[in-house]
Length: 286
Image (cartoon, rainbow, N blue to C red; front, side):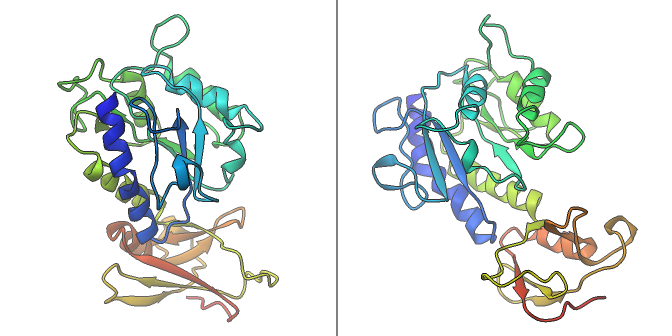
């Protein structure tokens, strides 16, 4: 995996660049041995901090030794740590979509060296209370695994295993897999960033309103295309999204904004587009 780690280091900022260009409020957690050695991972700036370390609220470096086949077990064990260099649960936001991008040329094994049961791992993850429910998962898998290009599931040329457990988790969570045998992960991370942008395009968290009391009747949205040539107001809808609405609504819990109809389609089809959320003026309602 030494070559894959070098490619990871040189390409990881492609992912953050795509997310940032789409106006997505993102955070990245990297679980692995932190450092500059052959089998260590150093995420460089601007995503990573100085000396391979964490970077404020954007990037958390979790210093945990990960072998080629135990990443899923390590994720669960470190998730249970409340503090220290291996802790990362405190970095999560309950309302945010979480995405796992394991990088491996092997499969996920348990203590008995048999492949992990993906459904049991999913149940264990959901039991932590931070990743949704079986009816509505707040996470997805986009593995870079030992398979040929999606949707193929055959082992690629330099891999040990196709990573069937990771592929099953990708299917379960409506994700997608990528090949670890790619010459460069740059295009891979760009594609993952675009996929995540499309996945989250129609659901936006409500940002801080600058310290002023939040008034749900004084919120307005504006859509701007990635090339800057198209800009239009998105009006609040009273109809349901599945009943032909074209605009935005609050989610049932009132914690997010949901784009509907053509507004959602426009955001999905243009990953670099931005949806600006403004406070203070009476909400424009369709």
